[in-house]
Every structure is written in structure tokens, then in C-alpha cells.
Amino acid sequence: MIDAAPGEPASEATAGLINRVYEAINARDVDALALISVPGFEWRDPDGLPGGGVHRGAQEVIARMRELDESLDELWFTAGEIVEAGERVLVLTHVGGRGRESGVPAQLDFFSLFRIDGGRVAAQAAFFDRSEAEQGLRRT
Image (cartoon, rainbow, N blue to C red; front, side, top):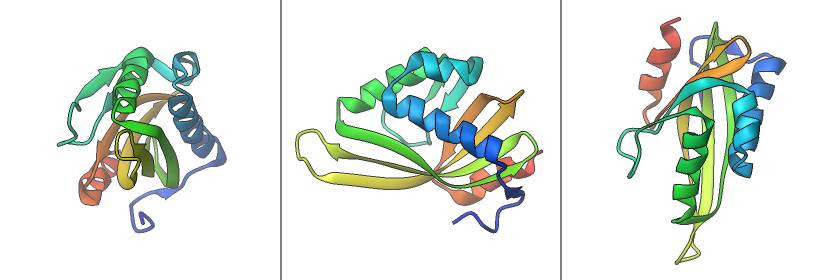
């Protein structure tokens, strides 16, 4: 839950943008992601995620998702609660899939801090720790 985070519930436009980001990622659609992000936007995986790091631009982000597809079948992302404070948006992100070899379902939640510029995604950083993500939201 992020209901105690600083900021306000996201506007329909902001929530729609975040949902389109996850739709593009789930479809592995580079073109759709490029349309709703600034060129060269940064996507940061949570610290400690194997193979993680910073990925720049729609092509690198989708390539990262395809890397994850090698370990997980049916990998998906959805947005839970969405809070915005100016150009920053905090999202409770749900991710899930099924182990490619084991078939065991897996799901986890983390916090995604997006920066929006002119109605497009300029950056995203993911955190397992809620307080770290909320600190980023307060920097507006």
C-alpha cells in the first residue's frame, strides 16, 4: 500500500500513461513504448536484481524484458496504486510469471518511481524498499 505516500491519487491521464507503459512492456512492443517515452529515457531495475542495471530507451528496456523471458514464461507487469506529486509518480507495481523450467508461478511487488516530462515517461527507477521510493517522490 502506498496510500500514506506524499502526493495525490494520480489523474486519469497519468494513470492511463502508466498503464500504457505496462501494456507496451507486456506486449514487448518497442514502438508503443517509444511513443509514450522521451528518447533515451532511463529504466532502472531494483538494486540486487540479477542482471539488473540501467537501460536507456525503448529498445534497451524491451531487450531487458526479453532477457527476463528466458527465465520466466508469461512475464507480466501491472500497476496497482498510483500516486503523483508534480512530475513524479509512485506506482505499486505487480510483476509475475511462471518459472520456465519449473512451471512454478511467481509474483512479487515493488515500487516504481516514474518521472513524467510533457506527458511522456522520462525515467523510471524501481525499489523493493517503499521508503526509498517515497523519498524520491518527495524530491519534487
